[in-house]
Length: 530
Figure 1 (tube, one colour):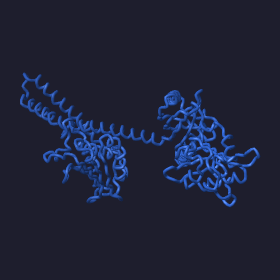
Figure 2: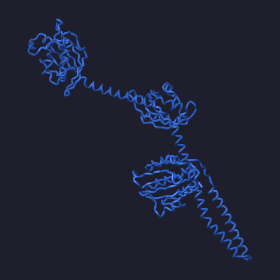
Figure 3: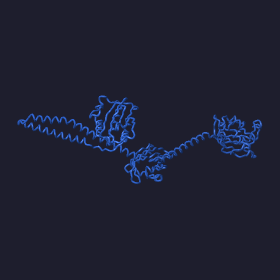
């Protein structure tokens, strides 16, 4: 209640009142004051009708910043901070004039040196005749309480904003479910919040999970369920983070992959609060499986091609000695003539010649098999093939800490080629470039793949910033079993050369103007191949 200033009588000055000792009203006030004033944990005081302090305890005196003894006989205006004294006088005068108490009156000082917020109740003191002779004040400093309440409100505001943000984000995330669940000490759990993405991840509605949390457990694939439930229980017990990938079976019978991550904390009532996110990773899992299959297929083709290269090289190398054996056997038979003494030797030579011919036939058949056209040509955009290889290189680039950049000329004309074998070529050239930079500082490891249209052909250039290629080795780089690496087999680049040649293209290497080397290959576009 706030009294109006016009309702209050004027303040009496110190000299206008009778002395405190001679004033009968003041004496009666002093007798009436309870002895509990001194030990009270809150501020207590009493003023007479002239607004002079009759009594004040130490706690209230502390609020004013002066000893209690200095207050006695002095006016409220003398002892109170100037920024609040006018308001306080109005309250006291209202009580003196009306005889009505003013309760829970809050007053804040704006003085930076002594800023306080107090709440006080002011009640009239009456004499034996019922006349109001003074005012009792009960004042409590609530400065720290206000600060705590303000801080608590800020925390609550932050929590509300956090929840609103999480709920807003959670409801917009595709194929993701934000959730909050509680686990009481006795076991079991229940969802207290699930985002709208629940149906995209589980095929169930939010209402279903909120009312029947066991529906979530039942949808975990039977083979995965025991391990997942044990891991969840352990996370709740130890408050450790949970991070698992598992399968769930939708109501329609289809199986999806999910990735569940959550954090745990214990609440005051002993229950454990779980907050987390569950993602539908089915597409990612399929992409990983496809990538693994592609890698395995490339490895298989690489092994087969390597075997073919080795076989072809062996056939080529064996042809010469077999031819020599056959020629020498025939020459020996000619020199022996028809001498009967050497008839048995002639038969042996004949058998040698025949065996040599059979071996030659076998080698020719092997070479025919190796050289047989096993390509599966299709119309390809070479930029798409490079993009495929970029995905295949992803893990290797991270492990080797190499930065890859692509420079793909748009609108390249199509080529007719086997996608898998072209992927193998670009992948092999890229891995060679990565290997060439292993001694370089991480910040300098940069691999680039560029495509372009040059002189009627589509060209691919794989550039590294490694050690380069010795000038004496440039012409031998693609020869079978030749390698510049100490542990190299000299087969990879030979395979690349064979594949490019089988597609009617050309492959070569050049040293860069700066560090490193660039490996090029070209392929004829559709309609330009001879």
